[in-house]
Length: 162
Image 1 (cartoon, one colour):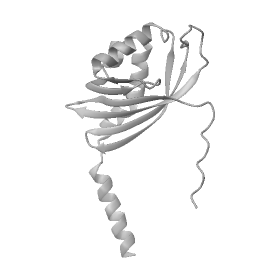
Image 2 (cartoon, rainbow, N blue to C red; image 1 turned 60 degrees about the vertical axis):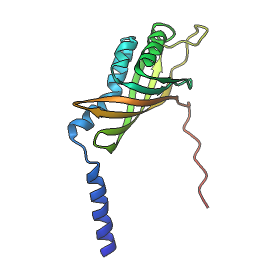
Image 3 (cartoon, rainbow, N blue to C red; image 1 turned 45 degrees about the horizontal axis):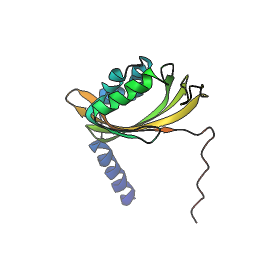
Image 4 (cartoon, rainbow, N blue to C red; image 1 turned 90 degrees about the vertical axis):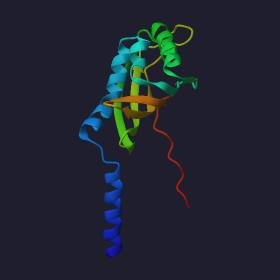
């Protein structure tokens, strides 16, 4: 019984170390919507406003961009070209605080209206963006992210360990 009580106290203390304000959580939960709203403007500069100056971003195609300038330039070209009519919708998200000023944000998305390299229409698709956000002063900025295309069916379950 004492072990159970000590374990419960340890879990409470560990959870309290990373306890966050409701306002910080609300800002981070709104981050996917802010991202999709900026995307809807088809302006790479608006999207880059969410990023830190030293953003590390890996695109859905696996290209790694370092720094806000490169992030903005890539997205400006993309949103003016094949993705000019693309509509992105945030679906669900999950927030985990690493520290009071650092959070792991994962969210799924749906996209329609984008084009293939040859200009033909793509079928609607889904994906997941994984981001790390850092609080500086009163605001949160994305310091790292990776966008990943989803698959049309649920993933195959992993085999059970023996």
